[in-house]
Image (cartoon, rainbow, N blue to C red; front, side):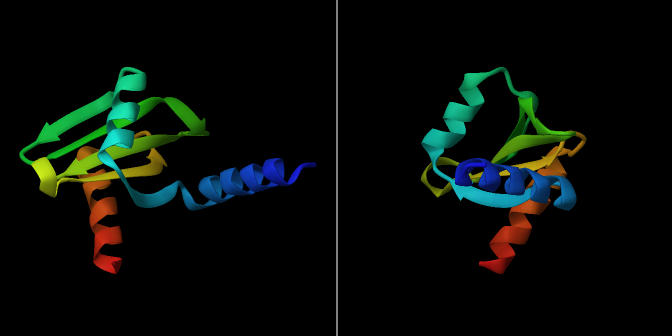
Length: 102
C-alpha cells in the first residue's frame, strides 16, 4: 500500500468517525471555483453570509460545504466536510467555532 493511499484512507476514516472535518479558511478564488464547478446544493444567502454544499459526496453522508462571511474585501471564505442535512446556520456555527479558537 502506498503512503498516499494510506494517508487518504486514514483521512476518510477520521471523517467518518468525527462526522466531518472542521472549517478551514480558504481564499476567494477557491470558494468561487467550488461554487462554479458543479451546480451547488442548499445554496443560501442571508444578509452578509452565504453557504452551499457540493453535490458530490465525500463519503457516507458527508459533503464539502463552503461559506462566505462578510462582504467585499472584509469577507472570509471557508470550506469544511459536514453532513448533508446541515443548515446554513449549522455551517456558520462551525465557522464561528474555528474563529473563536483563533
